[in-house]
Image: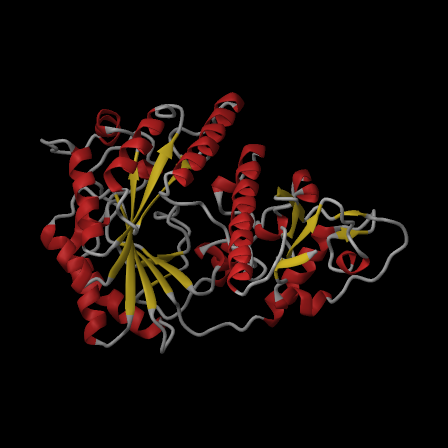
Length: 446
């Protein structure tokens, strides 16, 4: 029996060893078993510890003390709730933001039929507002830290001038920053990419593709497009990669393109196999907030089954892996919505906590010195537990927020896909463990 991943200190320092209990007990719902080699990996989603044991070994008493096995009537999720409560009380509230998501505009040059932002108002940031954004960041950023700017829209490049203005303003103030961007990629050109590197400190972009050329052009339906939008975006991805900018290509998947994605993966593999800074992954379209809301059960099963097959294909083609932190701290925040270190800046200067809410539920304004604590608390509020929570291995890595419409339902297919990602990530860590042992000359048969 060997320890592959050590448990995380913040949990173990509070839990300590589990007290010896009467009887054999049962395997904890947080214990995920993964067959490998001549044995099994046992990973605990709460303690983040992973051990290897061979098929002819029994879990010893010491391993039972490590929370892999618990008393029959033990309520593990209550333990997670208690730990999160302790961490929320002891966690220091840092002064200043580390991350700013900035909507340069809610306008877009594409007309995707499924876009959840179609129901939102259209407005763009002015240079006057951009000046105030620079002042706001100067006054609110975490000092002596490199902050991250995420450019968002609409299509953020539809309003490039304010990106230039904000970045130049921050550099003039000697505020260290890096930036990322969510974009359809169509509006990039040589000059913009040059500015992205030298002025924006752009390190990564996410570009979404909906299929091969014919399918993509039909779905995106770009305004005033006289060429093949698909080929233009593909060329821009080349240019971004050649400039040293990482590109995450998100393959949107739903019933309308479920089989076409298979062909697209082959095409991307052929085009970009030499590029190390490109990663592709599949993602289902929003089910609860998009125009395509409310999949039938059979449709959902098909979408997630195809995603699983495509993920395996992407891995085999060395185009990227979906990974999840399996050794970090216990999850106490879901996303920027309930994080104290992140804020969203709307085109007109209003402040929010989530890009799904661009017309309402503001928490303040860049010209004011206060935030609406009631609204902030509204974004932090967790959803009530559902029956599936009480037997779910994912509970320590899952937080469902009341304000997130996409978390309104928790589908079995989603849980299965997340568990798959955890298992794959643990396996990757196991193979790294074997490589380290091999380098130091450890003789093992695992």
